[in-house]
Image (tube, rainbow, N blue to C red):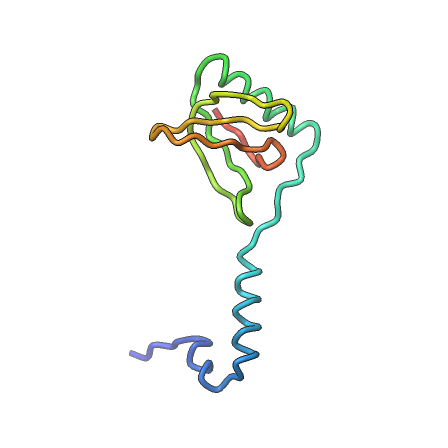
Length: 108
C-alpha cells in the first residue's frame, strides 16, 4: 500500500522562504473572524442570559476568543454594564468574563 505524504514530500525541494510563506498561509486560514452582532441578536442574547441569571439555569455560550470560537457551559454569575460583559462560572469553578460583542450564540 502506498502512503502519499501530500505536500510534505516536496518540502525538501522548496526554498525556505516558500516554506515560511506556506506556513503563514496555513496559520492565517485557521484564524476566524469575530462575529458581527446586530441589535436583534444582541437583544436575544441578553434575554437568554438574563433569564439564566434570574432562574440560575446553565447556559451554553459560543464566543470569540483568541482568533477562534470557543464554548463554555455554566451559570451567569455577574453583569458589567460598563464593560458590556457577563461572567460565567463552570462546573469546575472556572470563571470567565465574556464581552457581549464576542458572543455568537446563547442556548439554555
